[in-house]
Image (tube, rainbow, N blue to C red; front, side, top):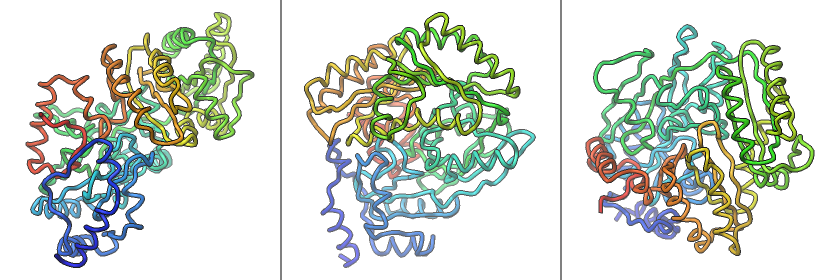
Length: 496
């Protein structure tokens, strides 16, 4: 065995595979990286684009929550579709497993290796190729950071990406598409399945599948791009995205409200949908524990007097600022008179709007200050939206849990359930899972609203997908990636 390979293997064996040990995975029949492989990648990409030192790879091997750690043998940083194609062609020939990675902001263990898979990062593929101000179509590399892309299309064409996430400063548009991210604007602009115009994808054997176009209507054959939206990197590596952007609203108004009960939040939501059928952009709900966490851990001041059982953040956007503000004020007065809300504040200038949004977007950061976060991203009928929060509080009573909180995108029935503890606790996890997933299935909900399946949820996928559906997914995987080198151990449970 070559000395370099021996050193790498010993290093990998010496590091604990946190991801694999917690989900009881076994390494697949893949080759191990050799010095010849490294030399090949350096020739294809340049030596600076091939990382093999553990210190250089640390950030790529650990997920955003720091709950999953792999031992990726190398990090590859291609700059173009052609380089991705060359890399995958070599990996396919050698049967080297590959973990595609964007901004590494995923929350289900889907973007980091489980064992020693090569990490194929799109971080250097960050060019915006075309912006059409007339049609709103934008073509860009998969590694474009969402916030930077949104800023650029705004400055150059007064457009806006129809997607907004708390991780927008780090996440990549390619990763957003690969996970079918939902986010804060889905209520108004819909899911990415409707916004993505085309994709360029490199398949497992290096074949480039180019479906990039800027037409909104194309009814010629199967719509192949849809297969890769939400595929989490198991069918191919997305390298380029064409997306339909929307005109950037001239004015935005945000209201931050306190509500006396969950029933009152439902009444307020129903009223908002009727009051603002064209202008309602976001309708976010947070329980009292979520706001306590933000206040206590991040020392952010809440703009309302006292404490309320539930909080709402409502955003409306349009072209006439005065009319928008007047309409929102009338709406709030009506809700107050009907006792749907007990207190509230409103903002229209951008600085104040950002302050109010920060209260909602900072919840994830605040939770991490408690220690370890058990995160659940589910879709449930609105009538039962917050029921599981109370049920989980009972489930974890007397355990190491610090807090249980619920918040999310009420406008599309997406709840983020979070349980924190000082550290990882197997006994606590046993009180949460599979209970939370079985309850979700019992109300005909989805165990993943927008975060994806990844490593963490694949053993529960059968709760919301039929055996026939799972078999169809496995058939697609075999068709696109017969050697199963792309993002192994993720999403699909074994057929047995």
